[in-house]
Image (cartoon, rainbow, N blue to C red; front, side, top):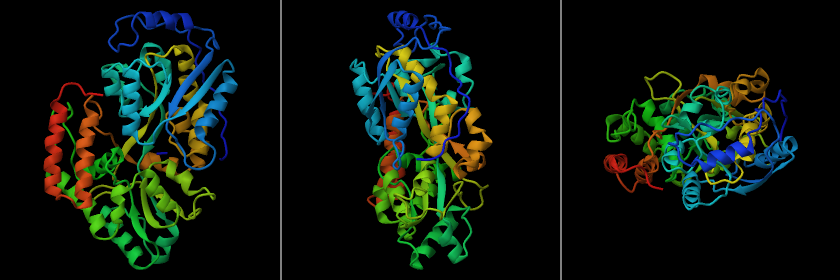
Length: 450
């Protein structure tokens, strides 16, 4: 998915965790999410941990200095007895998930810490692929995060992921092109489609609107936004039944297909993931872009962007007749600990640092990621640095139905069939019928496989 100025804040760091306490807890079976043993005590002494840990993380930014290396350097400066080795994970969240699940289920002790999607807690918790962090970190640690993030990182009453940064979908637009044609920022999907076609026909831009239409997790995110705007949902609240073959889903998918047939979006959008959509927009080829928060920083990098200074950001549109703004899918990444790690104390120090003001400010100010802690998220200094952060309070959010361990199969049922309809290889009605059937099978299968 996914160099600048730094806003320095007071570091809020928890005390280190006793190595002996962690070792004892592991001996009692801390790999199990259902362990009834008491959580290990938190030592009052800091700096107790030492050694080398392996951090698996997908690339976060595409321009400037690698934020992962920046954060590692800052961490090692504060924790000089701990060294972090970075392993670059795949950018495709499905590939990343499958690789980690295979490694950890096989007993691998590395990576020690891994950056993982916000949709993973149910599957990773159900299969003991991640340590229940709430057994090790006190409530004061979890209370610093913005509302909803901790519950989203939980499964069956335990917290498995520490929120690292949040993602939301935004509409990016070319201010100069809209001004040239006397157009306002679109607030409805229909207006966006019309304006995109107009700008293409006027010869001002190659593509009207680019987004994530490939057959992968990102398409599930995009579809969720249109579906929710149309008044639909993927499942019931208990994740026991699917609702994908409905009038709302038909409205959503029919419109997505019309973006391509009308010429508002290129046919190639059915092969676009975030990097391809971002590249087209930053290269000056597209008037509108749906992408995550990191896209602002990338669009303003003179080294790689031809549209520096010409980009605006707004909440996503909605369908005509609905209240603006539209819904934005909740994305983002958590930090998880491998239950087989031999360096739990050092892993926890790393996770605590990533939740500190220092790390959260680096992510938000320098790299345009939405911070997860309330102190940084609400900072007027931080908000002033980035128009995306000023837009966050105006958005309406919708999560993916990831509260079931069967989510990977559920999402696959969505994005493979939606992509088939977008590419024209099947009709909207056939795609939704197939998606409904496959989603029902996914939801009624035994707890999701690896």
